[in-house]
Length: 397
Image (cartoon, rainbow, N blue to C red; front, side, top):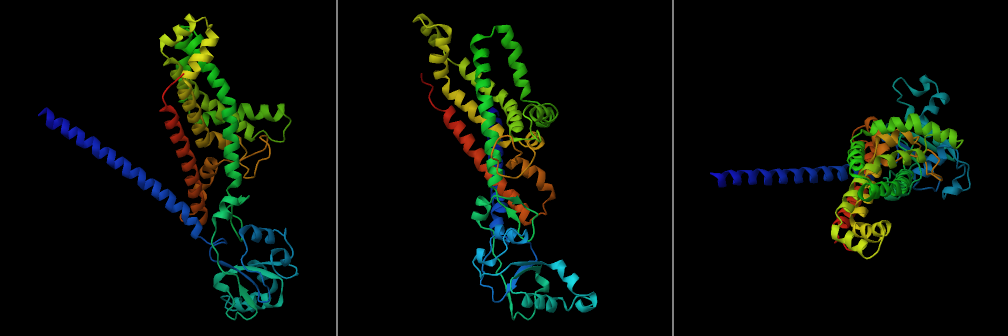
């Protein structure tokens, strides 16, 4: 009977593990399927087309070039590979200022013809018009071929403006830079503090002090991130703004400070446990050879616990990279490439949290956010694999 019961338990646990593995794989497949669907989407707004004069030799325009045209940053076709001619951007709603409702027809049945007239009469024009109103007579009108967003547009783009028209701007470079800047400086702040506290708790603190501080530090890991965000917004942001005479206090530096505070419990706990695992015989041997306490700490204990300390650092980085709410509240959410740490930035997790609720399901913006999730997944996976490899190394002095 006991063997049958054990067999049943073993089967249940095996099935549970198999189901969990399959669910995780399906989630990963869904994430990448939705994300990479972005590269099959048009680089201009769905349901619209770009038309130019038939004599214009321009061919494919990148999303960045289209934005520059309609923002009047580029004013001559020669810059874009065309003839030396002034660019005339034309948006669909301008047709209503040129023609009356009677000329356009009751149900806009004459709209395609009128749009064709405008394009044929304006050699340097680039018209952004609904596909349903494309001129029936294409003489003198050239419709630019529909192209898809490329990996170069996404990974090399410098602007993240998903609602821009005519062409969405899905340049992920500012978000990656913001994420790396905030995370890197958070670790540079948290690492020395965390290791210092870990050394104190493991080697210098008395039993009563250790029993008091360690639970308090571990309790910090259980505080919701939104609480850290409120603390940063109410306390740190005004201090940074006034102390450094900045226009705004919501900067990458504020995000780094908040993330450093959040990463400290992980770094302290893991590093302190690694130091505690140093054999007592090694400590006593070091002291017996004439080393003082500090020499024993940095020549024996820290080298022996280097594997665990490295794992603590990597896990702290993972906490910093994946944090959402606290960073969203204190970094200013400006999707621009940061040049200093004292500018507003935006991270990948904050972007997903802020925009996913407003992105139409299945749309280009929706797919772009899923692709951001893929990037974050890969970064986190690399961090976790690194932590596993480091922590599994043999501990040697």
